[in-house]
Image (cartoon, rainbow, N blue to C red; front, top):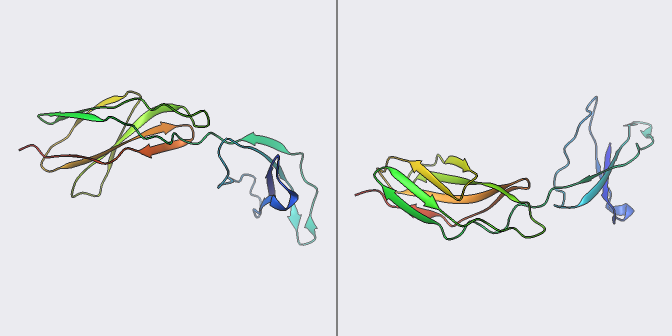
Length: 157
């Protein structure tokens, strides 16, 4: 049994997760970002729970950036699409931007392609038989951030 709590938790707010058999690892999900948690482990069986281990503390990562990339500009030449956008500035309680994901797909297709970059620009080589839909989002230790609004790139005529 894994017990976990925050420093300011009331006893009634302790989280408990049971694992069975010889399981020795457990991921705890649904925790608040940028928060100190304490956790301990104890054995249990039909007779009840044993003593708890000494608690360890862990700080969860900061949340991903809330602001999406802005001022996105694009230029299409032949089958090369050049994209540029402004660097996302993060708030103090957000994870630092490590890079960006460009998600792109043909308008009538469901398969999304992903290009990752550390820059605020990217070039895509894409055949333009139809419109393309593009979104850009930040990548951080805390996860992916908010997506830009979807941009429609019209097919070349």
